[in-house]
Amino acid sequence: MVVRLRLQRFGRTHSPFYRMVAADSRSPRDGKHLEILGTYNPIANKEGIKEIRLKTDRLRYWLSVGAQPSDRVGWILGKFGILPPPPPRYNPQKMVPKKDRAEE
Image 1 (cartoon, rainbow, N blue to C red):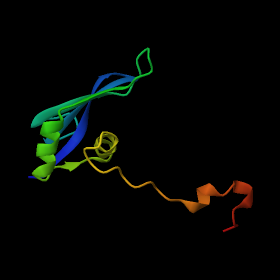
Image 2 (tube, rainbow, N blue to C red):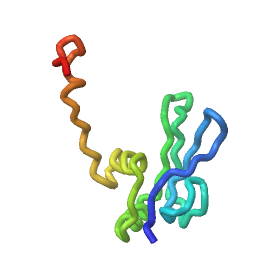
Image 3 (tube, rainbow, N blue to C red):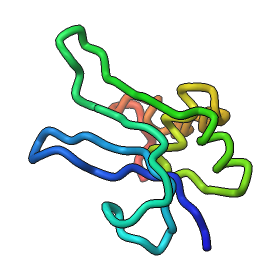
């Protein structure tokens, strides 16, 4: 059984709220989970802060036993120093202004 660390979507239309969970990779996105590891609210409050709450000890445990984070969870954990941050994507064509790009 492969365990994934991923986000479960809650909330309503245009107002998402996520739980970070450890779940079997075969279960659906909002289906059964093994453990709730934190929450993530991507909608900023009045002060402009997006709220993230993590159980770092349990996250470290699941990572130590081989759980694989999803892309977005890996990005969040990289921001908090639990995982190394993902390398920046390198695209040399985007660094050159469009008018100066070589014709293909």
